[in-house]
Image 1: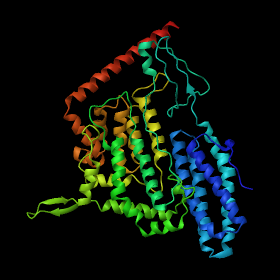
Image 2: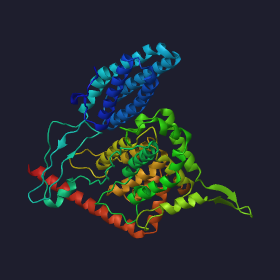
Image 3: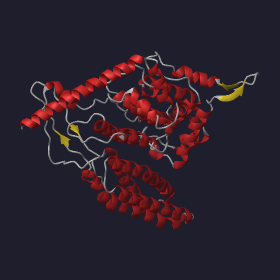
Length: 488
């Protein structure tokens, strides 16, 4: 009898619960395969389990780290042991030869998945339910603008989660408790109903890239910067980039022999741009990624020499087309340097056929936002983080993602957080190099942005004025709280 997912199995984290539902599906599929002795699906099941272990365990570990789970190290060791067990079973299955000799190993896979569900998901993982913060109720004086409640989870100190905290502030100070207003465009829903595998492949690639681009498009309507945003933060750029990929890159992928073979063998019914990646074997995922990289490599500038021996970069006609396709409609829309090999590297990094970065990027951002508030703009119910905590967290975040994305994480902080000024950016770049040339190697787009800031002296003057205003308001708040506490 197949296992049916129940709400009692959920831990309350949508992405992890979706993974666990997938585990239930894999278990049911293995039960059916063993019962029917359907050895022809055995290899595919092992591949799906291996892919599941890689992606889900990584996702779960990132969540535990970001939530301050005290059992992280033990849980990570359990994941490693489970991954090792799955690999050993797969090797035994492959070495068993063909035919009935493989059936015991397929049954062992089923038994392993049963234990994963019973002992790990329903035993260990349900402990993660405790990692939910308590909403804190905030009140202001009569006549003040309402302040939206915000879930506060301190990763620096133990917090009491059983008590609501109420603060009464006069109207002129009420805004100091308001949470930051983050605007993130909604992700497009998965598309389905495809009858052609090549069309599904194109749409699935676009969908996965969009999940990275949308993350970097976040903004704060309360923070206005004088300079245009970097290109990766622009919805207009995203649209132009998709068009360029469709014209210059996707033909290389869909015309490959493996994709054409899949076109005749795969029934697209029930597949969409999201579960498309779950259906692919690791080998086919790697093939698509190899074609993607090869197509971008074909657009690279090539070193050459003029007749007088001067070194130059030769630009291919297709690369000129790319430059034209990505040109902003207006200089204020977004800032895009003249596209060279550095930009080609960045564009290449935007597709990963194995890892869907959306969840990890957002969990990383939640931590960044928490630490920003604790260090730079703490609410009165928060403990203050140590100086340099945000800087250190950002530097650590660079290690988790493709290296080309570091710039855009830092610049996203500048667009989102009022007190992350260009001076903060300047000081941050000093952590990655002794001079500007070295810093540009690691943070080229941040260094480019700072050069533009230096060309507009009024930007620094305005930032200094805003910082002075904030300091004055915080002093006002301290005096008010001191007076209130003294009177009580």
